[in-house]
Length: 484
Image 1 (tube, rainbow, N blue to C red):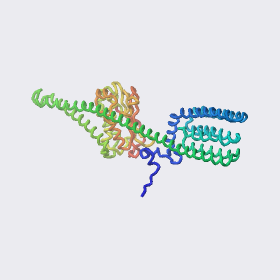
Image 2: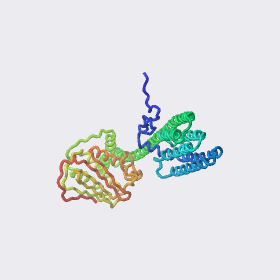
Image 3: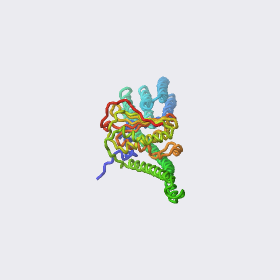
Image 4: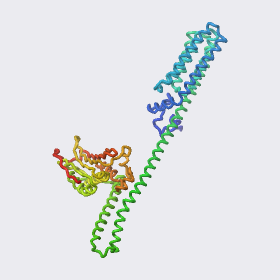
């Protein structure tokens, strides 16, 4: 049993590029935007050669005037001279029209009209001339029809239309306007029909090959672009990994060195027997380093869970203002030591949200930690909460710190990416804070938006959807707690 083979089997990349599917009758791409892309590139590439062909045709029309001079009576010779001059003048206008702005979508009409004018001039000559020239000069029409197939810009459908129009005009002229003998008409129509059939056939496959080449080239360029994007992403990922490992090696080594160092001092009793007051300070340092190390590991594990889709919500109703106040208390001493003014503008209504309290606390801590870290001494960090007109709960953390440049702003939300590695190392941190916040907020169905200007500070807006706001009262006067 024979398997039916569709036209698309002969068309390259039809599976990989659905937009490259073609109409088998008109040889036009079914996707209109892809057709426009093809036309633009095709015209840009082949327009100079196309206009050269038209000018070459003008030269041929004028050159054939020598034949008029050699074989025609003087009266008819001058009539044909005028026809040739008028034809060449109109063709010159078409050449100029090829360079008009936005000619892409009209170029087919321009070229087709130039071929009809050229052929029409020859047909007009056969209408005027006496026998035998009335049926001999038709040979120029065959040359014109065959010549039109050389125009790489002329699409198959337009080329076929030009051939059929010229065939119809000649038939009308040879039968009605200036009848020629039947034997001459039969011979002329035979050769003309064969020429048109051959031209249509060659024009079809010429147009097909041009479009096939375009599709292959377009496909290769698209794959090349994809490869370059993947290479860029791979290089960026490799660089981010290297920077992350460099930062992590520092972040992990520092608390581990403290833990091991202080433990060895105490183990070897270098400051005397156990019970020395200095050991108590060391124990505090060991505990602080252990908590810091645990915090780093928790961040890595949480982000890893979020990336793999395993980070889950343990939802409960939470008085949001109370939770934020408790989370900010741990920063009061740090803000004071850094010389940063930390303030919290409350709603005064203490709304209740359905959230994961641990994750929300982590969101607040990460945002405020970042803000304080990159705010210079004498600067300020402000935390605000609000219920907007749509009923969404917004948490805003603003600072007047060093800010982030516009081109780097999208990158700070990517995992393991640090915009300023040297600054990050100087201030500490793993660079996981913002990506982790983004994942946790999105897990709640919310959004994280960053606004920043280099040297002018940063504004982070966390928005929770309205359905998570269980209850809230009308806003009262705001209060503030601060650390300076």
